[in-house]
Image 1 (tube, rainbow, N blue to C red):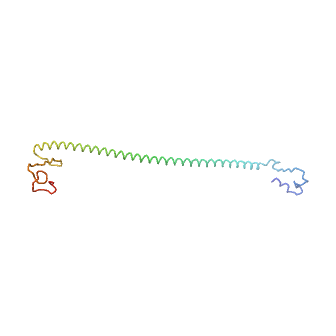
Image 2 (image 1 turned 135 degrees about the vertical axis):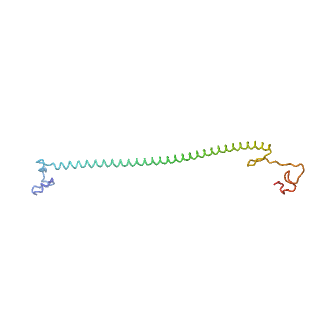
Image 3 (image 1 turned 60 degrees about the horizontal axis):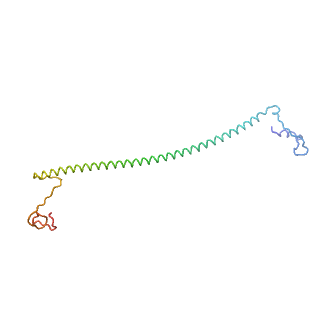
Length: 181
């Protein structure tokens, strides 16, 4: 029952509160108030209060959850950027180490080539010395050695004048260029 339901039971009891005749104070009592059985309304008020508190708690928790999600997104973005920077640095370091390795390999190859060149030059010098000492002993012995070693050219000089070429050319073998070929 609502507050004004008792007024509409019998229209003779109703008094217009805005009229001049109204001089009394309206009193509205319910039977549950008299007998003390109005707990359903109190329970409804209590349940409404609990529902409001639960709604506020839900809103607070959802705000906290969205804030945590935003923080996690920011942290994930920062971690991704850090990984990207680390990946880039690792690639740069790998390229630099590869360049350093190439330079080192070139230096090692150049040193080996230089050492082999020195060894070759030393062996050629030793062979030349041996060939020179052998050529000196062979010329002294009258034998000439054949091979790829350079030989000493000897030009014969004749006491009589000859036409063309160098000394020792026969007059019939005169070359128009003047060279004894």
